[in-house]
Image (tube, rainbow over the protein chains, first blue to last red):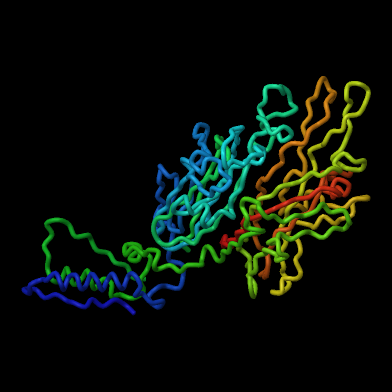
Length: 241
Length: 293
């Protein structure tokens, strides 16, 4: 079906906004849903020049093109960030609180409902934490930091996505339950990097996102007072088509 | 082929009926083509979904208990050939991914698989028993032996699929992967060249302080603790359609590197396995299928 403007114009007759807008609206309807297959050639007619060039968002480092968004950010050399028990329940084993990990969020503005793949990785150095206090895991070697993805708000890391949480253990000598950096051992016997406290993790999380703004990020539940997220990266890929 | 060729309206141009009618009439022509469509700004609503990305699914793996109050335990495998342990929910229910009546992968498409799982190895007490591939002796500096670990012992996770029927009772390793049952002398395992869908986690971690090439002090076990393991596998399909009905993650262990001649293997270490185990909890398995051409 080809387009037929609902209003035609005659010289000497007042042009009304209603007539003009009527034609515009009919044209909008036609172009955004009214074209039938018979109106379109059945051979390739879309060339590269017809495809909107991608837009690069320098802050979020995401590219937005006709098929979706791609991109992400990482720690580079200087963007070390942290997790801490002081923002997630003070180390109490009864706590299920998660706190967002600074800098690891990424937001995309989807033009259409789509599938989003959130890829993330991190490298943490956890502890040591020898602190005492009510409610804390008394076996210090079993204190951990969990990191999970969230969508929208950080509380979803626990409420919806805690099954994706991966953890690293406190840097504690498991034989003595004392500081893994204990000065009494100055040798390769007990290097802190291999106590299980220096770990890298990665994961991929799929999300069916609605049209509009969606934020992904990483959140932590820490039973350890200080966890350095030494290196990290987050990236997304979305598909409209 | 038709084409709309008309200059834009500029400030100061006279508005008359003919000009106005002509602009709308431009769109009455048939055989709309690249040029006028380009200017008419076709956008996402005109394009169908499920074209570039033709399928996606995600399932939760294992037992969802993030603080590990309850876990699933896999014991080290000693009887050969060993059956793989499918990741399950702790009640014996496999947490595999079902594709129902089947998911067809056509030539020109790629299947992308990502997974991760929370695991905790337990090295047990047999790591330094004679026959354990992870065990060897250092000089203790006084003419005696000091047991040390190679750090090579590991648990291996790999992907299997069912390409037979929707009953999902015929899982086999995916393309590029084998099931570690190949006979290699007195051992069973895989050449590394057929471990393309495998990921490993260490099965032990021992530390010892060397002193001028000797180990005067006994080694200590390290803090293996809970950790994550993850994997990714891509399968670009060529030739003809392939229908898959299920996909799952399995684990075997304890394994150890091995070599015969110039071929490197990952083989079962049945001695180490005798007292070793692996616990796991939750994770994620995500699949996306896309066209490449």
